[in-house]
Image 1 (cartoon, one colour):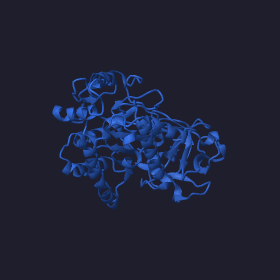
Image 2: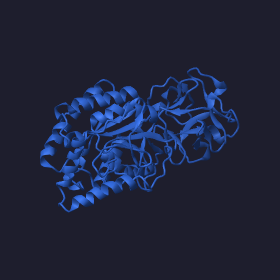
Image 3: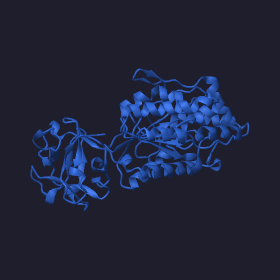
Image 4: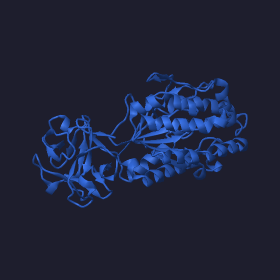
Length: 405
């Protein structure tokens, strides 16, 4: 968050300013003279009388922006975990919640169950999950110093990274900014190797001199991302610079509500273009194996089992707001014949909306069939590849415990 004296501190979950220390890494906010550069760049777009107003608004942002949500603990709905990661644009400076509001609504409208994750939280009531990792004033190196701890704490399946604006605003060693970005991405994929990582070409700046530097930074990203992809990493480029124009900036730096809406649409389109970003695997920790459609079959009636986790489409399960677990987009995890007795086989079938295709995720890791009231279970508590799935009376054993990957 930003206080009235221009001091940068870490954002807390309660919306107050504090210094965050966790996982052995402490916050590394930019030096005061560097951070004041951002304030000066903002001020050049306003008359002198506005400086007092803006200073007041900074304090208001610190004390009020995070207040619509009471977040003593992370919000979680057991949906696909998405980490919005970056600086003030991710936090939602000038528009509480920023792009996260429209993105949440688009994903829910599409039928996805989504869990935004992070150590910070803010935004309006129209944002269904307020968690994020947006840290105002932070550069690439500040994020890099803390990202491993955040990833370990939140274990995201998908990461949305927009960072680099403050490197330009502070004119901080821009010749090496692309290398810092490459290193940050490497640390993300090394810590969360199965995560889908979406990296934004950063939004434009209103200052023409700084905008040239933004374009230079962005021009290096396709090669960086291309090398990661060639190495088999799950990294994707999203061109926010092409989506947001300087007319969409409220202060020459941060988007207006319409600009944030454009960012949300760009993230949303990118996520839909990579279906695995919204469809995590479901792991049975007892066996270390994943919920799998046998033989990668796609026909209605195909059996399910546990198998070594590989993340391909027959192990990708999209949880919908209707309570379904979908594979291949149009097949639902199904208790065969709508049976309700223990031992009934679990298959995939055309999605019908029936209760035998609806599942409730419990906090203890159990997945309970709505129609049967019984738990998704690895038969006989087996742990070997090919062990079949069924429903069984819920008993809290490892055969009935599941987690996302």
